[in-house]
Image (cartoon, rainbow, N blue to C red; front, side):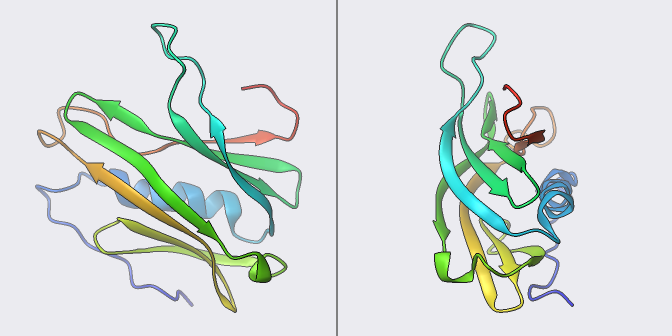
Length: 144
């Protein structure tokens, strides 16, 4: 049972990118415990820049889930902040939900939110530009 009702956005607000991102994150973390959550540095961009800020969530199965900001002209998705509740990290994650129009993401266990993300996003000029987190799952020790 989900602690958060699935949000619905208008067809002129989102083309399914945001619910798809939530589902991708859910698939990566449900059934595991968070060992660590920390900001990291993104891969270098195609122009040699430092890359996007990212959040790295290390799981109990030896994998890390990396969330990278994206931006394409007037469309973007960015992690503004995150709050890890260390007193709940011993609990297995049971779901991922959102509130406030996909601006607050909740990674939760049976005892409540383990990790909360504050997210800024816009589809820009709807659906001409890319947005949504770039989410990747890697083995601990695997290079970027």
